[in-house]
Amino acid sequence: MAKSELILVLEQIERDKGIPKSEILQMIESAVVSSLRKYVGKNAVIEAAIDPETAQFKAQVVKKVVEAVIDAEIEMTVEEARKFKSDAQAGDEIRLPAPAADFARIAAQTAKQLLTQKVRESERDKLYDEFKPKEGQLTSGTVHRFIERTIVVDIGKVEGVMPMREQIRRERYNIGMSVRCVILRVDRASQAPQILLSRAAPLFLERLLEIEVPEVKDKTISIVSIVRDPGFRAKVLVKSNDPQVDPVGACVGLRGSRIRSLMNELAGEKIDLIAYHEDPEKLIANALSPAQISQVKITDAAAKRAVVFVPEPQFAIAIGKESQNLELASRLIGWHIEIKPQIEKKAGEVSESQIEGLSLKTMDLLSRAGMSDVHEIAKQSVESLMKIEGITEKMAAKIIAKAKASLEGK
Image (cartoon, rainbow, N blue to C red; front, side, top):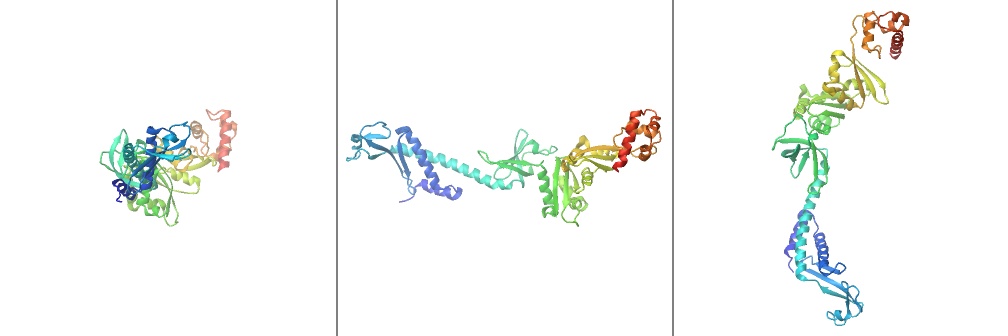
C-alpha cells in the first residue's frame, strides 16, 4: 500500500530536523484521544491508532458489558451490546467506532499544530546546542536594530544582544555596522537562544590578546588578570612562563605594533601591561604604572593593605583622573592601596616616609628649626623640642616616639 502524503512529510522532517516520525504519530494519537473525550465523556476509554505507513486513522470507544449500568460513559447493558455483537455477555468489552469525520478533522488539525511546534522546538534546541559551547569565544556580526539602548547584533543564524553595560561608552553604533564582540552567555529562551554579547568585558580584551600575541595563545605568557574602564583605560597583569621571554615586551610588540592594534579595536583605550611579581611590594609598584613609586609599605599582609609613597610630581599620575589609576590597580591585584605624597628632601626638611604619621604642619615646624635628620630627631629630649615654637609637650613626646619607631622599622 502506498504511503500517504502525511507519512512522506513526517519522514522528510525526520531526516531534516531529526524529529522521529513515531514521536509525532504518538503525540497525534494522544491529542486525538483527548479531543474525542469531549464527544463521548471524560471517563470514556478510547483507543486511537494511526497506521505508520498509510496514515489511516482508527478510533474506538471501549465499553464494558454489565447487567445494570452505573456509568454510561464506560458501560452498556447486555441488550445494547447485542446490537453490535449478537452473543455478547456481561463482562465482555465492546468496541464502538468513534465518529470518523470528526476524528479525521481533529487528527489533521493536531498534526499541523504539532509539526509546527516540534519543528520550532527542534530548531531552537539545535541553535542552543550550537552556540552554548561558544561561550567565551569571539564572534563578528552586524548591528541589526536597537531596543532603546540595547544593540541587537546579527551573528548569522541568530541574533545576540549587547546591553548598554556591555558596550564601550565612547563608541557610536549604526545600523549595518560591523562589530566584533565576545559571547558572554547563552541561555535557553522560548523562541531562540538568548545570546549576551560584550565589548566591555575583560574577557573581550583577553581574547583579542590571544589573537594579537602568539605567546599568549601558546601559553608562553599567561594573563593573570584584566581590569577595564572600557574605552578609557585597562590594566593587564601578565606573567611569563619562559624566563627568556619578557611578557610586557612581547605584548607591546615591535615598536608598539601589537598594543596599538588592540587600542584601535577598543576605541583608543589605553592599556597598561603590568609584569607579575611574587614580591607584593614590587607587584603593587608595578600595578600603579605609569606612576613612579618611591616606597611601598605593607601595613597588613593578611588583609592585603598597603601604603604607597610617591614623589609629589607623580602623585596625580598615581591616583589618576577621578582615581581611575588607583582603583584599577587595586582591582587588578586585589590589594587596598593608600597613596601618599613623599615630600622631596630639601635643606632643613624631613620626609614623611622617614617619620610616618606626622602631619605636614609638624614636619614644617621641624624643618624650620633645622631638624633635617630622623636620627637627630630621635635623640632629642621633650624639653629641647618644646623650645621650637608651636610644639607642645605632648607633640614633642609624639614626635620622638614616631622618629624612634621609624628607625626601628628600617
